[in-house]
Amino acid sequence: MTLFDILRLGFGDVVEIGLVAFILYQLYRLMRGTIAVQIAVGLLALFVVQGVVWAFDMTVLSTVFNYFNQVFLLAVIVIFQPEIRRLLLVLGKNPIVRRFVTSSDQSEVVKETVGAVEEMASTQTGALIAFQRTTGLRSYIETGEPLGADVSRDLLLTIFYGQNPLHDGAVIIGGRRIEAARCILPVSTSMKLSPQLGLRHRAAVGLTEQTDAFVVVVSEETGNISVSRDGALISNITTDELQTYLSNALSVESPSVSAPSPRSRVPA
Ligand SMILES: Nc1ncnc2c1ncn2[C@@H]1O[C@H](COP(=O)(O)OP(=O)(O)OP(=O)(O)O)[C@@H](O)[C@H]1O
Image (cartoon, rainbow, N blue to C red; front, side, top):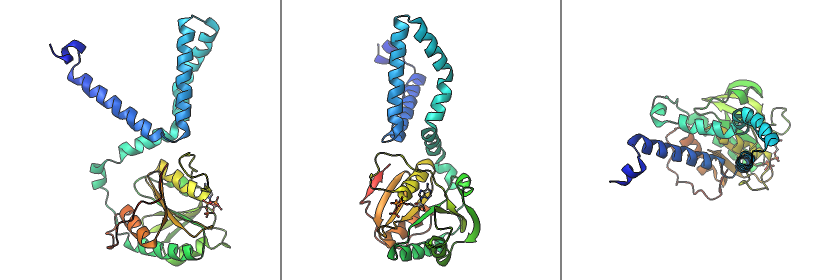
């Protein structure tokens, strides 16, 4: 008699256990370092209290918990909306599907952007530039001023010039076009980010936590260049490194520069 016979486990059960373990592990990875962990612990504590209430047959509290249970599923969806979104995004990043997505040549976009960022870094001009990849950014584009212009170094410099009314907020680039300027991005609440980081950098991370966008930040305070992807921030990179990261993100054949070292990588 094998262990499987004793436990009465079939092949389907083993697959199911594996899948549940995988989903729970992915959920843990998505929630790690976010406020959702504390909320999950709070919900767990509520379940323990509920168990005690039922065990001792406390009628008043049982009624209260019955009401709570009716809205529980809805509350979980609302509370964990960012995590659920990220989980679906991870599942949606199927490499087989992505093979069928044709990418236009973005080398001009990379060249113009790197040129503008280099200039803005040297003049300490703050900038926030988001590149749409497979996740649509329409809901963020709609928060800004629509532009629909080709990406160019000079236009990016003009937008982020301090006296320009469009300089506040983020520019969103889709394909070869600047879709909009002055866009509002979601701000990350990750506790893994340095408390010194301001809203511009947190907005960059916030967007890449929720979508597969690639975001470039120029700090107004230091002139440092940072990039964010998949909820992580890589700070203080050179323009050569930016070129490599951006080329990779936009699937452009990268020029031969040495691979950037992930020195200030901060997972969010
Ligand atoms: N949610 C947001 N979406 C888009 N842009 C934002 C958002 N929040 C702040 N910003 C931009 O960031 C600017 C404020 O940056 P702040 O000084 O707080 O950030 P920082 O990360 O310290 O950057 P810096 O190093 O440039 O000062 C705002 O003027 C605005 O342009």
